[in-house]
Length: 440
Image (cartoon, rainbow, N blue to C red; front, side, top):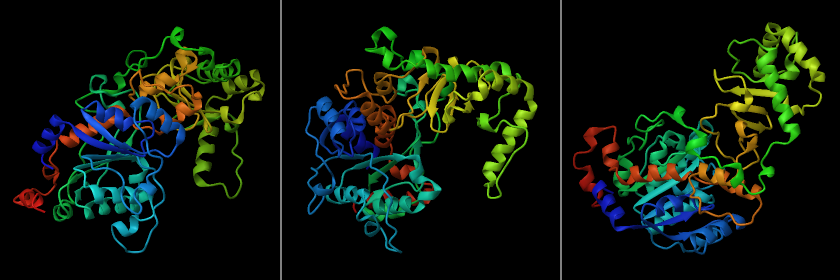
């Protein structure tokens, strides 16, 4: 697709389908740019109900029966899908579609083959393009080329915190892989193997992610706006855990820079006692904690004694993961997370990625977790978007599974403004190739 054709399509409006739709992050992004959703599909009944309520359309239950024996997804200009990353079956040296059959991506491929949308925009976790999933990544890119779509060998990795608030960014570190594929014809798709990623990994237009302010840019709700605000406030026990570690940071250890490795109270000891089969990584970790203890022996001993050797702290709260660099030592001025691995501390600029499990970020200055409305803002959903009367846990899970609206908007706009032939790393390929592509 040429940039001129894409611009014309956007100017006239375009249609899109939303596969594996969740609660509608793709829908929010593309509808705001003039798109019309003509089909959506989501298997989770709670997410489906939220989608139908907010977007006023019926949502199909499952993509699998919609592609077998014939594709029932209607014609469209743009195909969007935040598809689950299921393990792909490795079937020897077979190529393209043969290796994708039987997977959820295989169902997407069948829709693409039948409907031939002008643009395909897929989203998945960062790890899908990592070293453990080279086969899966190869299957996806080869399948798209076999279907006649130009796609980069390198992933587009983007996060909403790299966009300024004015550009639709939000203060959330959420690196995700976007797979952008343009319909160019099979012959040209095979020749365009050297195209560069659509977007560079990093801030856009000199935006400084350190400039985020949760109070202003999220923005946080006033406590008076939050119904049943006590549900989100930290309990006395949780506040005590934080106070114990606050004393550690402010009184037990010296003013020098805090270590980047996790501090585990149970391993702040004089001598490391390891079993013979202790892995090297764990041994290194234990040695670092023991060395840190020896540097601050007196303060740490007094701290442990004062708090009865930390017997009131659960095991998962005896570990501190300091990721706030050289900021001040008051935990209440930071963003916190209670994780299975310990208490994680970050600067109060942008938040860690929302996840589909209970690791809701804590705003230290508010002594409470972020609310569902704040979580929705973090993902770029408008304030009119409603989750109904469902439990908060369902809302957090749905938002943790959602795509970031601002990131999708940015990637989509760049895709429509870009001619894939101009992304090539081999300029000699350009001569006459574009003309041949549209004749294919």
